[in-house]
Every structure is written in C-alpha cells, then in structure tokens.
Length: 253
Length: 253
Image (cartoon, rainbow over all chains, first blue to last red; front, side, top):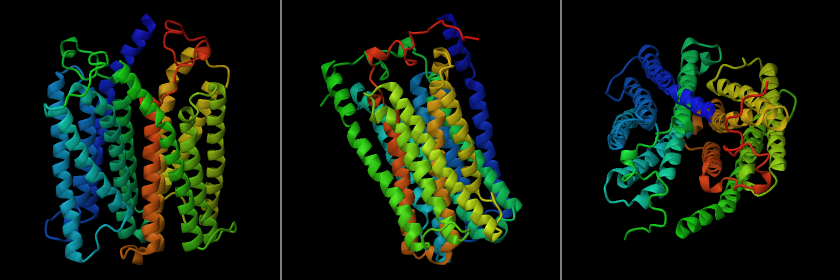
C-alpha cells in the first residue's frame, strides 16, 4: 500500500512539470503563428486586405487553443485552491477565448467580403463553424449548470461527465480545425514551393506538430487520475463530485 | 439508490444503439471514400498512376479509422464476453488495421515515386507518418504487456491507463490526419471549383464531418463510465483491473 501511495504521490508530484511543458508549447504555438503571419505573410491590418486575414490564425490559436487549453487545465493546475474561484477562472478564461475567437472570425469574414471570396466552402470552415457554435453552446450550458445557482446537485452531477467529455472533444476539434487551416493556407499561398520544403512550409508544419503536442499534453493532464483534484473535506457539503452525497435524491421541480 | 441504479442501467442499456450508430457512420465513411475515389477520381489501379493513389484514402479510412475504431470499442460492445477472447479480437482487429494501412502507405509512396513527387513535405504526411509509427509502437507495447504472458499484474495495471490514453489520442490523430488528407486532395485537384461548392468538394467535406462524428461517438462509447465492462467474478483472480488484488506487490525481476 505504501509503495502504491508513494507512486501516486510521485506521479501527482510531476503535475507542475506537465503544466510548465504545456505552457511552453502553448506560448510557442502563438509565437510561431505570429512569426508566420508577421514575417512570411506581410503582417497585420484591419482594412479588408490580406493583412486583415492574418489576424484570423493568430486570434484562433490564441483563443481556441492556448486559452481554451489553459481553461480546461485550471482544475488540475490549481487543484488545491477553493473550487468556486477555480470555476470562475475556468469560465472567465473560456469567455476570453470566445471573445478573441470572435475577433478572429470577423477578420476572415471581412477579408472574404472585401475580396468576393465565398464563405464556408472548405472543410476547414465547416469544422471551424461547428466548433465555434458548439463552443458557445457548451459555455452557456456550463454557466447555467455550474455557476448559475439554479441547478440542483443531482443535475450538476449528471451533467458533469458530459461537460468534461464534450469540452475535451471540442478542444480536439479546435486543434484539428487549426491543422486544416494551416494546410489550406499553405496550399493557397505557396502551392508551388511547398513540395520543395520551403522554409514557410516547414515552419507551418512545425506549428501543426506543436499544436498537436499541446493538445495531447492538455488531454493527458486533464484525464490522468493522479492529477485529479484531491478531496477537500471543507467542500464536501457543497460538492457535486461525491456520489454518496445525494444518492437517491430526485430532481427538484 | 434504486433511482440511481435504474438510471445507470438505462444508460448502460443504450450501449447497443451507440454501437449501431457508430457502425453506420463507419460504413458510411468507407462508402463515401470509395465513391469519391471511384466516381470523381477515376477508380483504382496498382501501376503508379493517379488511380493507384486512390487506393491510399480508401485503405487509410478502412484501416486507421473504421477498423481502429471498432478495435477500441470491442471491450464495450462485447463487455459480457470472456476477457481473453475480447483481448485477442482487439489485437487482431488492430493488426488487420495495420496491414490495410501498410497497403495504403505503399500506394501513395509508389505513386509519388512514379511521378517524381517529393515524399513527406505536407503537414498531412507529417501527421500520417507520426500516427503510423506511434500506432506500431502502441501495438507492440500492447502485445507485450497484455497478450504475451511475461508481464506481471503490477506492470499491466501501471501500463493500462497509458495504453488507453495513447490509444485514444492516436485514434484522434488518425481522424485529424484524414481530414488533412481530404483538404490536401481537394486543394490539389479541384482548387478552382472548390470555392463554388462543386459536388465533389461538398461530398468530401461531408466525409470529413462523418469521420469526425465517428471519432466522437467511438470516444464517447469508450470513455463513458456506464458502458464500462462490469466486474465478472470468475475473472477476478486473473484480472489486472482490480486494484486490491496486488496492492503492495513489487515488480518481478
């Protein structure tokens, strides 16, 4: 038993390293996107030009990847802080992710309009819109169930695993959508030199791998048993996590 | 308690519907890929021509998506069968997935060689090779730990959550790689008409959404607590799942 306990502690003790690693990858993904758009694609503007398009990848990687990933890791990174504060931080980070994504979405729609490029024809746009709409739905559901005081403990307990599963699935979808965006942008901009390993292509491919690594690391931190929030006795009366608490309780009208 | 038990039973009882739904989506993804390559891209061959390339998407969707997805669902779909049989089925389905993927990989490399197209320049190829290499490593690790008799119960128990996590992560990576392949193929073949909603583009986008839906459904079936394998008393002596069994045991040399 002691060996088992010490193994769990050791594994749980490695959490800060995983969190630090994820932050390095998250920052790297934002920086690489910034360099790609800033150095190879001509910088940023807000005038319907090609430079306005460049705001789109930067906002989406910052909002839907880095902030989204951090938002779902707060329950592990701050697993010994008061749960209510962590929940509020989780909701606020997601809201920030949403606002930054909206700027990114507006940028690409305005760019399309200014150039008479049709909207929503590519698989990237289909996946992106799906992610965006479901992300808003997930945020509203999460707010109603876990921050708004109306929901009963029974309802919260029933919804929690769904919230966690769809939150992670949507995060995976966001990463996949970014990879699709990278592929689309490269084939529309440097289709002649991409197959000759042009530096821009290699940089953008590397961005894709960094995004993937960030996604897998966040998924690992969030799902690993050893990293879960330990029971905090003072929270038990309020918690929705302890199955014994309201077993047999029925839904309040 | 009774209400809770009946809720769990009801949810567990919906498992066959989820499995049936996943099979519909899995078959649909293979059929749509077949139609796309057969009808819009000129059919199949094995002579270095464009038709040999067409073998690649069909094999990858059949192997790395449909068979891979089914392989990780067998522990749920057959959760009341003898565990050893289910483990062997899991390994055999993955082996079949691997063999079919190898045919698909050979097809695209031969096609590139015949046309003097460089290998491994696109993000799709980077993600695909990563998935393929890690898939083989995962299969070998799984075989050594769970089918080969050498591993101790302690080792199996320590490795199981990693096997499950990386198995699912690789499955997600396989789905993302397929989406990248769809995007790449469309932009290399119908870049002029893709933005005009050409039927081929809409069909291929739809394939992407079907692949995503299959991936999410498989992920849901595999991770949902209610669908887990119930304890089978006759297996307890052999099981690696029951933590009480070998607690405190040390690793055999």
